[in-house]
Each structure stands twice: as C-alpha cells, then as structure tokens.
Image (cartoon, rainbow, N blue to C red; front, side, top):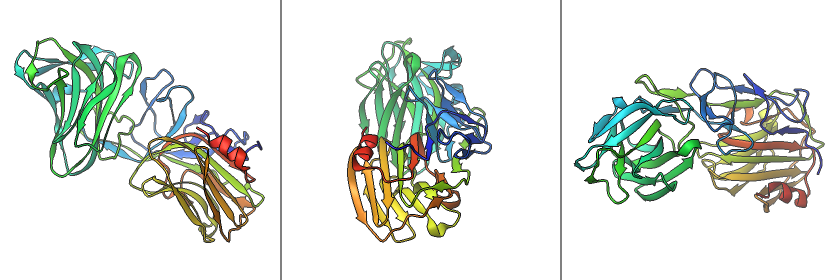
Length: 395
C-alpha cells in the first residue's frame, strides 16, 4: 500500500498541539484548543485524571493504544459529584473516603442501607428538566451483592455490579455499564423527559427496591454526572455546589499545503458521537469555494461527501460504535467504503485540485467540529484500489 501524505495516529502531543506521524517534520501537526475549563481522561493505568487547559486528551478508556478524544461542550449539573453528604439520604447512610476511587485516590463513598423494610435511596440536590438527559455514576460492589438502580422519574435501569450487566430497564433511550479497574463500573441511563424528575440512586436486593435492609449492606459510589446529552461524556468533576462546564475540543490543521495530484483517499478510524449537530472530518482550502469535505451528518448517522462542484453523496452509519471509513475521489468519481465494504459509487462532474490547505477535524474555519474518538486518520494522494480500501477498513 502507498504511503500517506499525512497521518494522525494518536501518540505525541503537547499543550495546543497534536503531532502527526506523517509528515514527521511538523508540517502536518494539528492546532488544538479547549480554552479554560475542566476536563478529564483515562490514563494508561486506567485511572481518571484531570487534564490542563488546552492539553489534548489521549485517552485509554478502551485499553491498548490511546485515542484522541474530541468532545463538544457539556455541563455536569449534579453540583456535588463526589460529596454525597450533600445528597438527601432516605433510609441509608453515606460514609466518605472509604476506599480508592477510579481516580486512584481514597475518596470514594460507601452507602449502607438501614434495617427497615422500605426503599433505600439517595436523591441529588438537582432535578431534571424536560429534554434528553444522561445520568451516570461510578459504582462498585461492597457487601451482599446489592444492585444499583438509577432513576429519572419513570425511567430507570437496574445494574448488577457482580456480573457487570444491566438486568432490566424501563422508559429509557439507552443504558450502559463500562468496566474500570479494581471492580469499578461506570453505569449510566439516558432518558427523554416530559416533566421535572428527581435524580436518584436506589439500592436493590436483586428482586425489588422495597425490601428489609440488614443495616450492613451497600455499595461504593463516586463521580456522579448529569448532563443534557444523548449519551454520557467524559467525567466532569463538580465539587463546589455549582454546575461545571467542559468546553469544546478543537483540532485543526496548520495550513500547510497537501499535494494530491488530482486524486485523494481520506481514511478515518473513529467512533462518532451523536451530538445533535453535523460534524466534519475534512480536507479544505483557504476558500470555501473549493471545499472537499467528509461529513458525519444527520446527528452523526450519515457519512456524507460534499464539494461545491456539485457532489453530495451519503451513506447511513451507526453512531457510538467504531467505524473504519474511506472516501476516494478522482475525476468524475467518488466512492465510500465502510467497515470492509464498498457501499457507494457516485459518478459526478467532479475535479480534484492539485493541493488542499489542511486536514481538519472540522469544516472550513472550524465549523461543524468532529466529536468522538479518533484511532487513526490518513490522507493519500491517490485513489486506493478497492482491495486496499477494503483491507484498510476491515474491522
């Protein structure tokens, strides 16, 4: 296979910069910006750590090699995401700093049911407004295999912290459980609410929420988050009684010309989020009149190729899963490959210019920024063969 003219395989970075692998002389590096705001990542050890302003996040949530984590802005509205003494406890007690949390510090809280027959739960000091919300928290089994139920009004899910599974759910858009080191899980629910709702966490004995407590059993919890998003984003610590916002990540090319010889193949190995907005990974010039862009449109559910010369083709794709995609363009022909298959061939009156100004994780001038997880992105100055494209995109 031919060598790419630019390749970003996440590895090197510094404040305000993500290094390209090809070229290695800095000409293909990316300018990164997040501004002032809280942000976290999962480090090599699998622990959650704070990341400084304008520092790119190479994230190890999936283990193995890092990915470049790019996210839209989000706010944690929970107010006290680690101090559960600020939540209202119903027939249970909270004890702070009882075990090591997913941050590696001894700052997790244990919750313990009382010995009455009733529900045993915590209620956050915030309520959910109408809209689509994601509620997440880190939880770990402690005594007698108590399950955890996350509740938003009539929407809930029950999580088994022994098996790492969602046992049942009601009225949800989605639920998830993700394992972390040392027996921790990040559990979450997403619901579309039509009325105000309490944000609650309930213990469950595996059968019911309403049971005779033994005064001893419970779980560990840490890192609650409540955000108006269609899925949970990376953890945003909120420690002082106010909502905390993580600002949007921006990753743009540095305006070094890319020679293409009137042909191009653009490859992306990514997980794209459903942000509610269009997103772009694109090759652009200094003028929008010669844009050639590779778009995730319709809230990330379409791969779409657009140029101002009349090309506008798209293919449906699934969000929140890893996809390997190639778009090839040459005189009068565009192709899209997704996960090892040629899914679209479009004959069109298209010409490809000799050069492009930059590869961006956004459209012209930074619009429609990409949101998701970047494993690998490459630009080739030729059209890959069908065999090469299928090999590169096979999952």
